[in-house]
Image 1 (tube, rainbow, N blue to C red):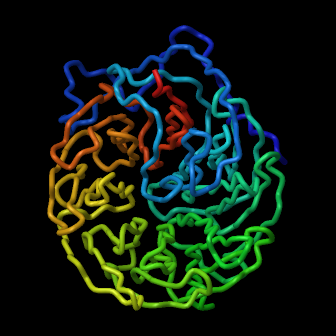
Image 2: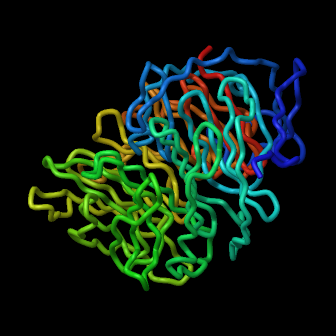
Image 3: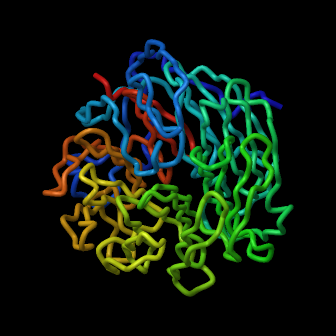
Length: 469
C-alpha cells in the first residue's frame, strides 16, 4: 500500500546535459520573456548535480529553526508567502541549476517542506498519492495512496487541489483528498495515524471542482494538543468550518451553515486576542479559533452557480485583506471589541482568482497576480493603506504563484516560466527571467523553499532547483 507507483519513479539526472521538452512545438528566437504575452516554447537543459545532504532538525510549524528556511504549509510558515531564506535570485536564461526531479501525477496541490524533506500529493489513475522525498537527494522516504473518483466538471485536473500540512514537531502530515478524505500520516513512515471521510460523514455533495481548501494547523489554541481548522462546507450540518483534534481527528467544534470555498484559514493575534479568518462561499467569516464562536460574517461573493471564492485571506497588523475574482479587494480593520470597519474597497486594482497574496516586508503593500478578467492577467503591487495601485507588470507569466525572500520575489507563471523581481513597491524591476518555460503548463501550484532549494510542481513532475550558488 505504501509502494510508489511505476508512473512516479524518482529520476535523478545522470547525464551532463538532459534536454527537457517545454510546453509547445518549436522554439522561438529573440523572445523577450519579460514582456512577451505570447507563449514562448522550446527546450531547456539541466546539468547533473547531486546536492550534499542537509542537516535536519525538528522545526516548529510557525518558525524556521536552526537557520534553515522551511515551507511546511501552503503559503509558508505564517501564510504570508514570505520566508527568510538565503537564496540567490540571479540565474541564467535557462533557469537555476536542477538538483533532482521526480515524476508525479495530476493535481494542483503544492509541495511543502520541513526537516530535510519535501511532501506533495498527486493523482495517478483512480488513486491519489502522498509522497515524501529527501529534499537533498530526492530519495523516496515513503508514499501513501488511497482510491478516489473525484471529477472536475470543467477542463481542469480531477485533483487533488488541497495542499498537505507538515507538523514536524508532532511528526505528522495532514492531507485532504479531492473527495474530502482527511488523513493524518506519520511524518517518518507514511503510516496512517487516523483517517476521516468528512464528506461522507457530513453529507457534503461533490462540487464542480474537487476539494481545494487546505487545513490550517493552529498550535496556540487553549487546547494543549492544538487543532486543525478546515473549511469543510457542510452547510446542512452547520459545519461550514470545523476544528479537528490533530491527535485523533475528533471534532472539537463546528460553525456556520456556509458552503465550501477553495481558500485556507488564517489565524492571528490582534489587540491581544486570537482571531480566525475563513473565506467561505458566502464571504469572510471572523471567529474565535478557541471555541468556534462567530464574531461576524462579511458577505463577499459573486452571484452565479459557477463562481467560487478561491483566494485565501491575508491578515496583517489589525487588518485583513479579502480578494476575489470579479469583486476585487476589500480591507477590513478589526476593532478591539472584535467588530470591524471597512478601510477601503477597490474592484479593479487586485482581483486575484486563486493566486498567492504576498505580504510586503514593510507590511504596507501586497503583491499578487490579477485574474484574466481585466483584459489580461498581470502581476501587481498594491498599497495596503489605500488600496491604490503602486505598479503593474504584464508579462508571459499571466496568472501565477509566488513567494518572497529577502529582497526578491520568486514567481512561477502559469505557462511554466520562472522569474525573480525586486521585492519593492517602487517599480517592477526584473532580476532574472527564464527565456523558455521551466515547467510544463498549466502551473497552478505554489512554489516552496527549503534552505536554498526551490521546489516547483506541475502536473508531470516535481523539480528541485539550487538557488544558493
